[in-house]
Image (tube, rainbow, N blue to C red; front, top):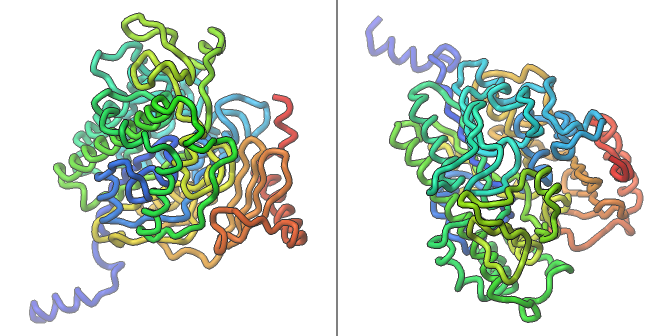
Length: 518
């Protein structure tokens, strides 16, 4: 046979007879308490050019869901299960019930364990928050599939000297003078990229930004302070206008009832400073992401890497109290003093401008309702403001560039997607779907957190706040949940509530009354 004929025949053979393609690297970039509209490509005024570039060269999701709070979302990400199935239906407290042990179940293989078994190198940098920080290391990242780990076991308490900071399993009690946690997380992710070379790798980069406390460097804050003097009403209106330009033309929820009009707000310079610090934290994270992408490019790995950017829940309305007792601070691992011995000034005190190491504040509902534009409610709740977050997928030549995807997706979908890319299957049944396949015509998704409950069945969503009546919305017509149809469709409410309870019984989610006693 002539060589040209032979080559033509080879080209015509079925794909399965050819060498399999190289398995892609996978890099997760997870933000913490970042609202739906807090990055430029979802409507924000905050400069996020590196994240926006990933969106311009990739696909954005308009209906991506988390689990309403950090620990449950991270449990679902790691296992492909609803968080109750993984033992983390609440946080890292043990309520003595299977779905609420506050410790990632040993019966649920993690995505790191699964990928590592197939030959992937694995690393994590950032916040773990899937086990108590009580000294027991059985559920630390190094015991759950990550060969490299640098980060915090507990939630964030300081960006300058974070408690529970460790590398591998070695505690890091002190940090250098120029330390800032966001930068350190990125540096360790970059170290792993360089160390792994041409071997396929999975890197979970779990930023703590922009979760409270409001800690940022003064040059970063200064770029934003004048902007937020306009107030939350003006900033939110500008985000709505930008979202419409971006193709997210949704009806906008009114100002949250706990938020005053900006014209009536006291302490305006302090209020503006709070959002300026928050914006500085987001901007710093964006620059860190730019360095990670640059490292992938420098190593010749960018073209063969799926990069995923998301957030663990909606914007956070939590207030910071100034009257916490020393015992409470100790139990929550909150430092009493800075590295140079100054007392930390706790609480949302208008006389104290946030940002430096000796402050400890949050931006509260006043600005969280801006972060969650155009939706209602916040982190903790299962209304869209609590569970809707950005999702960007970037993989040159494999993911459509500059596209929006409007089909519903969920954090439980990441596990099966990564397994498909690695040409493997989960060792145990999971709940999610492969995001890179065509979505089903209809999707059923469920939530429960602190008694806040929701069920999405296609375009219909049943939702309620803790101990309150069910609400019903048609999300195709009313994504921002403004027109409650529960009274006009009681049979649909009854049937969907029954199906929610069936799910709750299956996964171990408890009704709200169970939260009356620990």
